[in-house]
Image (cartoon, rainbow, N blue to C red; front, side):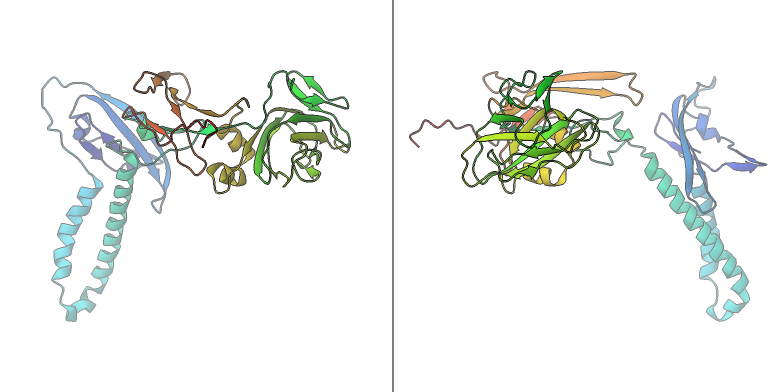
Length: 388
């Protein structure tokens, strides 16, 4: 049994085995300070391994006699261990090396007891580390989307830094109407999604502005549940007829990496669903990003899953370059999502305009420190007028 009192002193004591149960006879120190106590019960196995633990609160009412118990730390097993050491260590130091045979039996018993004390000391140390009395942070949480924080962050300060990201979707179209796409061989729009007909040649295509000999990454969501396979036509900016995807079953995010031709005569992207597919592929939110050599986004497309990419690189309109907007909302919820709190933060420049947090391909990023309310701008916008 472990508890921390309102004055931050602590009690740690062993339970007593009582038949087929364990009984904890609470020491007077448990009741020394009125208020709410943070408590924990831990059950361990024969070898000291932790089987289970349970935390709970205990309320101590004020005594009729003030200061009837002076509050102090009570360490139970550690005090027992220290008493043992005080008793036996001097005896061990006084043993004549020539008389060890006479003390062999007692020495073996002492070794067993010392080993037991050492184990209990280690168990105590491990328990105290897990309790985290001072609510010190013990892990760093980074990532995107929903970030799970350690339990010991519940009553403390959470620091956050928002870093900029600059992206450009190379596919410029209206995600609801797909009006910019040319639909062939029975391809249609169904519930704002693009249904790509089965055929042995192009069934949908979109004009674009791809660079030659350049690597691009595609992400889209496959809506239909049946098995389909999508092909990228060579009558486009990309190399030969390629299986853009494998046979895919079920709704899911899909990623693909392709490289453009050394000479582009038809600057467009063109797809068709394989005739051997069970059904026509239906997609939504397709986007395409350039993957500069050695850049963060290139590494991400090589290493992250399609689901992870979809979170980190969401769909954006292809009408221009987009950067992180300095209007931020933080929402925290408890474990069962019955309580929540929301914080809105606006990052503004000296003229009062909301900041844009940008990034460069090699990893340079603007950032906004939420805790300090400070923006660090590492990029600069330059407009070329044609005379450079």
